[in-house]
Length: 300
Image (tube, rainbow, N blue to C red; front, side, top):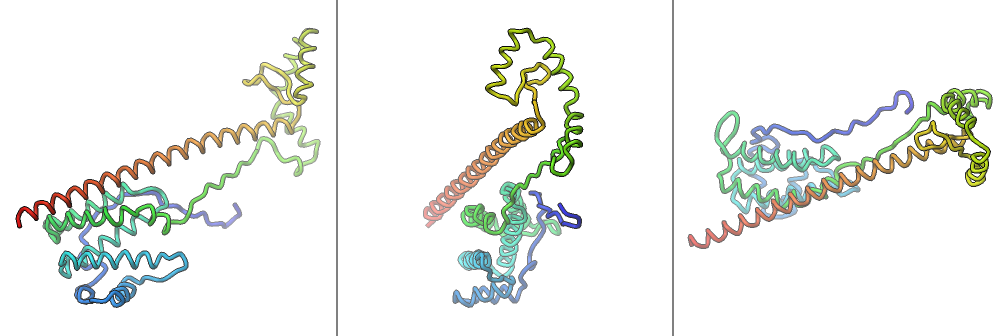
């Protein structure tokens, strides 16, 4: 990294505290106006102007526009007044902002924030919470978010979050590059690094008998760069600086490969658990809707 280079900070998943959000992002006059609009074009134009949506090459503006448009249609379907519509759109905006604020998985934190927001606007206990939604409306709002936003949670994360890649650089400080130093200095440094191993290797070589020498020659014919010894945990000693550097790099690569495999397995397990949570919530929401519909038919 060069001097003065700015390292980007990647935010990690966090929890948020819900607060009352009536008239937070859209005022009384604007809410009354959007509820009176009857055409798709007028509604979309109003949403673009009110929420400052900009078109881009990635299609993010179109996705946000569709998200708010169908939210307005939901408010009209359930006959929400201006206060409830403003509150619902603000909740949607806050949930979306929290979901895309980090490239890491934060579906659990976002769901908890949604529950707190709905509860904060379903119980009248000012100034901590306001009774904006009735229990039936609160259930409908919860089902809407589960069936629409959280069903496409991964899509929102993919589109609105930058891709994060691990750029790993290893500096072999104990083994300097020979091209930067003279051969004499490089050999001296390597000799200091392996001084203890070399002395032990010499002691082991003194113990060899004539029969051991013949076996050692056979080993040397097969792998000239390796000498059998007892000082190394693997039973191997390096005969040159190049061989020791290659072996060290090989060991590091193998270790990194193992760690990355474990990390990939962990991420896959987390994604699977997230899918199971979303599917479970979706099934429960569908069951509640069916039960509510059946109860409504019985009353009629």
